[in-house]
Image 1 (cartoon, rainbow, N blue to C red):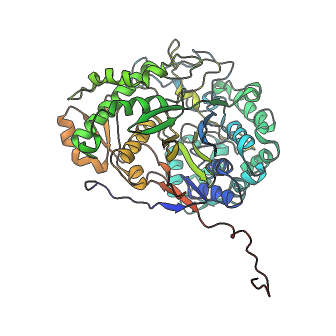
Image 2 (image 1 turned 135 degrees about the vertical axis):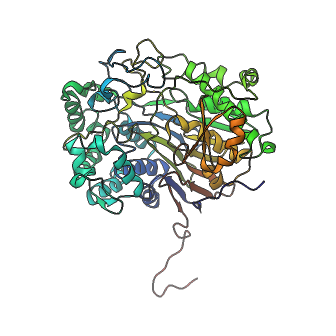
Image 3 (image 1 turned 45 degrees about the horizontal axis):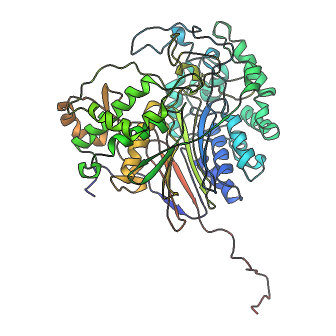
Amino acid sequence: MAQLPFTCEKTPAHGKQGMVVTNHPLGTAAGYEILAAGGNAIDAAVGSLLALCVVEPMMVGIAGGGIAHVRLSDGSHTVIDGLAHAAASTKPDIYDPVSDVPPNHMETRDRRSALGPSAVAVPGNLAAWCDMHARWGKLPFADVIDPAIRLAERGFIVTAYLEGAISEAAQDLAMDQAMADIFLPHGSPCSAGKRLVQGDFAQSLRLIAREGAAALHGGTLGAALADRIATGGSDAGWVTEADLKGYTPRERAVLSSSYRGFDVIGPPPPASSGVHIAQMLNLLEPHDIAALGFGTEDGLHLLAEVLRVSFEDRRTASGDPDFIDVPVDRLISKSYAAQCQARLRDVAQPTPVASSYESPNTTHVTVADAVGNVVSATHTINGLFGARFLVPGTGIIPNNYMMNFDPHPGRALSVEPGKRVPTSMAPMMILRDGNLCWALGLPGGLRIFPSALQAIVNLIDHGMTLQQAIEAPRIWTEGHKLEIEQALKPQAEALSARGHLVRVMPHVGGGMNAIAMSADGTMEGAACWRADGTVAALGGGCARPGVRFWPGHAPD
């Protein structure tokens, strides 16, 4: 492999007894503690996500949504869809759009789909996590949620990453006194190095430890959330106790496609990733990607064209399959990819696009245990600090998932009761001959599945190590501006000459977490520089069977 135009900033970890990779050191520590206590990957993933609700409160919470890709020890795969959906009393015309044309066509008057009670969709995170644990977990739920309770009750040290998020949202957070009391003490953002305590949230987590998801979906916490949403005045929302009680996670069959002898497995609609990663790999397969080389003008141009084609098709048919006909079989077929080769152009022709909206503020965990259970899960409260208010007395920050719907009636992504929000979440797994090779995922909104695609190509075509594959510089485009990361800046002039409107970015997408599996059972975990990603590998373990130690013991 030729010299790569970047160096890795983080280091991987190796072990045979388990692996936890999350976007915060304490989220990883929670999962590691659970594995070390005898829990399995499902226990550890749920425990990590609950802990991340405390230490990454800007990214994820129990009143959010997301999807988890689970591979069980028997080799079966399934997806647990905990995505949020529109409340029963919503209608397509509940918002007043500020514009009918891009780039502001998804924004609403007074930010009602983005901020406050009117931005909240029916959440699914807690219900999905409790469902996963009830079905496949090994430890008592009280043990799984305990690390999160401790972190909320005793507090944790704020990272620079969290401080930056608070500062970015400070103007909105100041409008809600309960939020300001926690995140803006004395009127200023919590600074890195200070301790952040969330006592009310600790009590909510203790209630969940006793009652499970019912605490939010039919219990005291749900009543508090519904009451706060209903009493929002002119900004009152639509989510009721009945909506919360009626929420059900959905189990969905995974999508599988092939690429150069590997099986690539991902989630189906309403997630875009399984469909369009398969489509893009099919488009790339006839080309000698390895010969083009990583980060070259020709390689980047081809990748940009493949991204453009996939986004063109995504805009045509994407969303909740209960409401929208997504032609999955056609989009992931090799024959369709062959037809689409003619759409790849030698010179780019950027055109403005009517993009959908997805917040990049999300989190991801990838967890594996020693017996073959693996979880790749992406969850969020959508925007940075969700709807940017806090339910009094609970510490709960609700999602603002309604901003992902198109505020115009009569469109594919228009608001409809019960419709799940669109998502680019890409909790992916890659197999060969039935054996798991890699599991990965990341946050990043519309940049998620294109970034996951690039990591897969880095591993298979460019022969990168796991650490290199996830830290490698990325690109992104929908067909208009081409975003490239700083390490690819030397190619900016050549790409501009090729017709691209190049924009150099500090990063594209969020922090990727990944695990690689070796034939001898060794796991490698890696996290990248784009977040506080941290890896913990469980090695060693219990003594060899039959070993006993006590004073005076002698061998036979």
